[in-house]
Image (cartoon, rainbow, N blue to C red; front, side):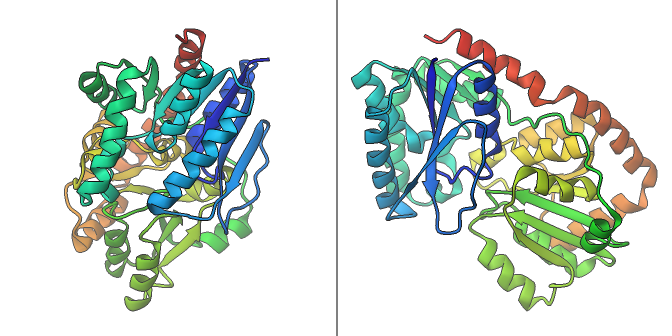
Length: 370
């Protein structure tokens, strides 16, 4: 049986994109080994394919990336494989070296414009380091895909390397039956907003979403996932005395998360235009909201706003002012006819944008590997 070794730098638990790809490849009769890392607070995982997590000494910064790639290099070198699948630039060095040494087929899945993430744009030395790795390796690759057409065109133009597109689309979701106790415990008779994701970081609008709750009555905000602003959010919630209005929950398995998503009244995506990566992103949560039938309130980032407007499934806001955001939310709830139209359109949109449809493109890529 052909074996694909898939590598990521996260702890595997909530990476929906990678799990969908691995599951799809398993159905194509590939043996899958998914490699990530084990963090001190990582939860156990059970998958239908093999997983392996490094227990590393370092958890961030240069030493983490160096240790991870060294460990990954030797793991790939001494594990039998047919195809190496590198997810994002931070796993690519080890995969590229082993693919050359062992003459293995290398596939590259770029989840974003890695060198444009906010963690790098204000650190020119570190950003330049990753630029150099990208510029050295990408022109030599043959099998690449990314999350949307614009990012694909940027990479293709910059490195003369063709990129296909596999979007972050969720699988078809059948709403779960939730008992009245869950509904009462989570939201009661109040309206509910949700902001979810494992990358709730700086400039993603989470702070403004919390501040917005000062001006909303009979409304709850759930922020579920992880990210580098969670500590800031906890302090902000406490200082503004919003603990009864804003609930922070740690990342959780997909089916558990979707219980909250499907009963939310509005799904939030409030990225700012501080970097090209956010401007061109189309994250998992957008399609999670669609599959859950939850109308969206999104900031006017190019790809996301076009998607919401084209399908008429929510509201695009041009502000991050907390008081104005609160006014927008209030107006959404007042205009019941518009809200109902969004809900109807979400049913149609959820039938079109499914992983079952999107995975056909993935199957084509793997049937035509070079």
